[in-house]
Length: 299
Image 1 (cartoon, rainbow, N blue to C red):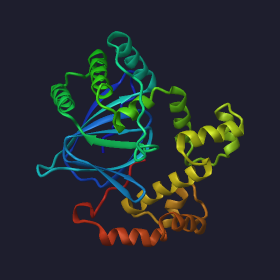
Image 2 (image 1 turned 120 degrees about the vertical axis):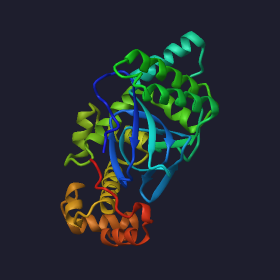
Image 3 (image 1 turned 30 degrees about the vertical axis):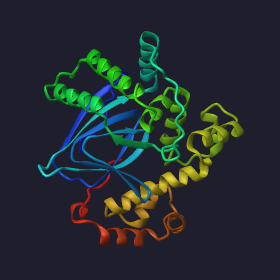
């Protein structure tokens, strides 16, 4: 399966992703933020037992970290999406330019409970945004952006303007919240160590913070204590491996930093209300025909 990201430039990257087969649930580890648009087909984003549907014509945001997604082709056996990747410093430069040159309001007062702490949000694209992505799709179809960083930067600036100048919404709030470079670095460091045998004290040291300061910042960013967050992230990954691979329970536990299988089963049951084996069996029994044979998750 093709990867979403290109890493050969510090500038925003624009990528068209096309798939003609249904590969089931896949995992993708993003080291940059992404704004995307579904051109054809349906995209699902999984978070625990919740499934978020992103339909054709929807725009979406993905934060850094691991995302569990499923791309389903339409009746013509095609799934297509366009993705814009960026880092906080890219966004900061663009917003400062738009603010100083055009007086663009870059303040945000969004207080939606549904998107607070969410790592993925979506909404139907409004007409101007649909027109923008249609234009971008034409450029990408003709390889107009290949090796042209200036064109990419111009399109990224246009995209940011269309979203930030729009009415207050989850998408606008998420993007403006990405200006905080320190927060992005903190998040990335945590995601880099999800499956590592590392103590909270060692993580605090890596962040050059005292233990008290580290715990306070962690709760501000992730809305829960470190230990709880790390366990939940590992269990979420285990859950996806259970429904997207045929690996044994012990293998999955080891891969997700739970070397003690009985302890893994106990934690999984506490989080999802059933054992890993029962969870896998229930999923296989209830699976729709279109998702009956998912591919092994990429990691």
